[in-house]
Image (cartoon, rainbow, N blue to C red; front, side, top):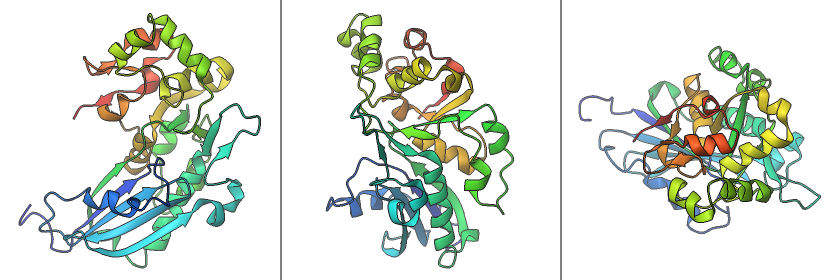
Length: 285
């Protein structure tokens, strides 16, 4: 990288993982190693991470020394979503746990605004991101048109307000799809056969059963869905202004991928009644 980048280049890293408890003593160090390679010529690195409670950005220099940080606490700074610990828990006790998709979008708006006085975005030369693979986002049939016409001068929240067919995204904590899991396993000859094909038996938090549940219980919503993203590809889609591919490593945690062939399993998609176009292509590593 020597000679290719200015000495004060910035790298912007986003993370929307929700599987780490904010109280964990190791959390503060987890993402400081994302950009360990090839940073000798770069002055600052930014790592964005989101837990159940907040979205946080940490600015690092080329030596991975923290030089700045900001955060957006979902419950207190975005109280109009009325979340508890960043999620909605169904009071009926059926295991449904979701997060409002627009809350994530608005948190990104607020966080970038907070950082604007501290970080020169003009020095950002590359952006990276990751996210917990079991959260899913559902774009409606206006989604692509909205994404491709995003105006950088306007807040993301107002522009993306009408882009989603499902307003609340299922996350890794959700356990409301037990019947869909059993249906999926039965359709391919049992849990063992499903694990041979997709790498795992069916789990409630996995995206395949989540999509099947929406297909069964909200057919109108399903029919209005143009594309399904994981949280990681959802963030990437916003950043590039178009639908981003799903990373293979994330795709392997959906109960939808033929892990040996590294493609979507037509068998699973058929038995799950999932249109392959909804999942889009996967990005090979």
